[in-house]
Image (cartoon, rainbow, N blue to C red; front, side, top):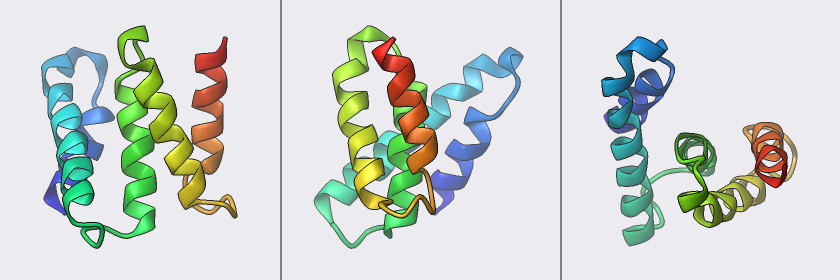
Amino acid sequence: MPELFRGSVAENLPWFFFSKRNFAKKDFQSIINKQEKNTGFANFKIMSFTYWAWAKQYQSKKYRSQAIIYLDKTISFDPNFNVGRRRAGELKLKFAK
């Protein structure tokens, strides 16, 4: 999953690499699109992280409803708090404020 690795690195770069952060948005969207076409594309851990990271990248009001849907998917993939449920819950609370 080179897209996952590149997107993960790109989202964690310092603020002055803002132009590289667009790779994260493109990569996470690409993974989501591939998963929608082929449900066996990635396992639940990867998809849980991907949905959370997408929501983290798209926090503006324009994308808020889609981000909440993806955060709910993150939570559904992780009922036992093993992967990203805590972070998804925190981001969802941030959106509620």
